[in-house]
Length: 327
Image (tube, rainbow, N blue to C red; front, side):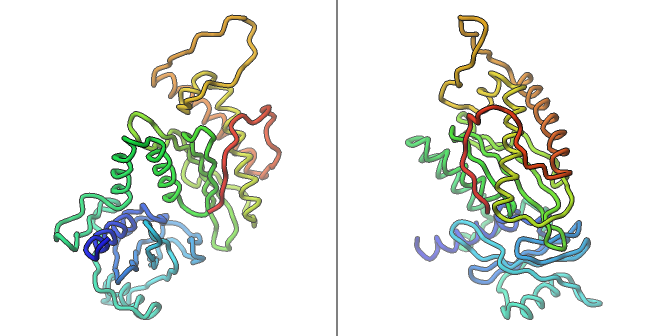
């Protein structure tokens, strides 16, 4: 990449950060400032908690995050709260805080009118960027995918993981189509007190990764406690196995259709010697089965979270072993 291309890439990555694609915060970004490969974003906290870099905040506080480019994304490396003085605008307070805490004076800054839809100016053309860097990579991967569909699928699944809140544990099933993500929340004391679940799935036809089921955002709460990386992995695995148990029990052949697995389903014992014909259910049937699965899973999950029960369900052998990692 030449210098102009690097400048455009930097602006596109910053656009993703402002719109909440990279290392998102629990609140929308309302203003930003940048200098070199660093962008500061600010927003108002809605609830109390602790952010990804250890900053404890309360509801109503305006928190500034310092984000640094790391490859094709940014990562929050520092944060601080600002409290505008009488007659001082929030933007002036953020710029003063950057100078105080980071000893930098940004060369660009702006406010965000519509969170999630901000467009950076392309420093090369002077026009608004049509998309962020993440979407640009997806378009490029789509073009490459016409020659190598496996490359496209792997790229989009990796991109989906990169954009989930931290800390999280993810499970990628062997079929490569289903990605289950468990995000964990820390309170002001740094203890884990809530978890959210998301089931992402890759679709061959649309060439997109979509969310097909999820829990309410951080609504699955439990008594606050300390948890090591190993405990997060173990507990997430318990909930993943529980979800799979209800998914297989309620879905039957529908599950195979939902996962989009190119390989045939595992052999099952039946009373009839003749294999049962494959069932081609429409979207309405799949939606009803999935809703029933998720409702049952939520009920059982709530029971487990109350005591953080680590005993896995008696669902027989795990036929969908996946990869897991803590981020």
